[in-house]
Image (tube, rainbow, N blue to C red; front, side, top):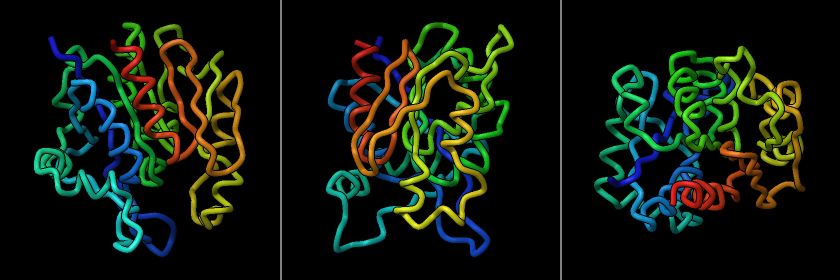
Length: 226
């Protein structure tokens, strides 16, 4: 049977007090999906509320990421993006991995949603890969395993850094600093300089530091599923 990845997207469409457009950072989704597709691995897009998932990071037509351009023209992908499944309607047993692409929107909803955390917990405890990139590891924060410990407890992880928040001009817009939250919960948090690809694989927990790491996270998921 064809393997399938559960891709968890935010429904939150803004950042900061000015209501800056936000959601899922598109390149972190498309570069990973490309790896799934190349390896004949299926995927479904799921969000807390279902329906259209907000995206950003694709608005500059003069500097459009070729992968974004490819998927924005892909009817199947766009249909999934505009009609995400509602988390309460899905069965975790139907999936072989979970993936959280980043985007600041995730800090506001998936980072504290217990329903989605429970779905991901079931996959993880069945030894299925759980992966996240950039701000995606915020989705791991509410996951408490059956032993009462955080999914991050005893694990080596990475995620978007303080230095990258400063470089992107978002340090004063975010509700909290992801790096600090990961340092608090995980056994070890590591990072490279801003904009460098960095992926950590610790058992079947996979994390990537920034948008440049999305494709490599996708490849790491594929490797564990093959």
